[in-house]
Amino acid sequence: EATLDLAERRRIRSAIRELQRQELERDEEALASKRFRPERGSHRQDNKENWPRSQHLEEEQQTALAALARQLEAITDVEELTKLLRAAGEYEERKLIRAAIRKLRAEEIEAATLAGNAQSSQ
Image 1 (tube, rainbow, N blue to C red):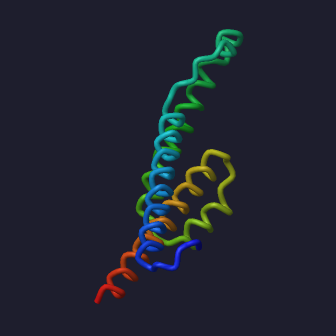
Image 2 (cartoon, rainbow, N blue to C red; image 1 turned 30 degrees about the vertical axis):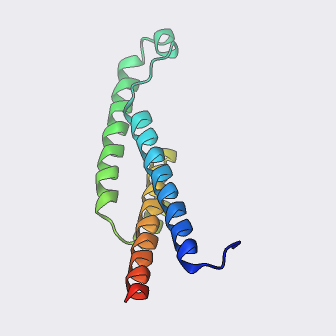
């Protein structure tokens, strides 16, 4: 807001969008690395009797989250993602859906900005 030069404002907004996109990508990478990293804790050693069952449940959950991530990549409607978010019960599911919504909104903003820049240059 400190500058009156429209071209400079465009460059600043573009740089801000790029930084937001990079931050979103880093968040998604961190989420993916956390999601698929096996837990190594001493709590499993304490309860060896239930360990195969808990390991099986964890593997099922990881498989379900991976399937959800693939499903979310195909969805291009924020309203549909919002419905999924409201219906989700697990924290990790909601986390993935919110990341997909942020990514989709960032793409929409970028597309609108590019369209606006294309019109203003004509």
